Image (tube, rainbow, N blue to C red; front, side):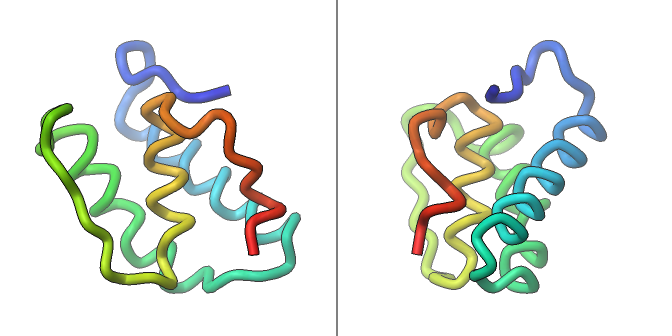
Length: 87
């Protein structure tokens, strides 16, 4: 279930996103965990506190795509993605 930003603290948001990312890596057995963890806080900050709904964002750090998917999940915008199966 996606996180709702109006009912969760910043710490809960970060913890939930990190746990979701770790679970994705564990369940899939693939991915670049270091690259994803290194930018997760930045992506969460950008999408939750800086960028507006009409702003565009381009992620050019391809090995960190799952961190962005988790960020979208925290906003309720990636509920239909099957993260662990992504290859």
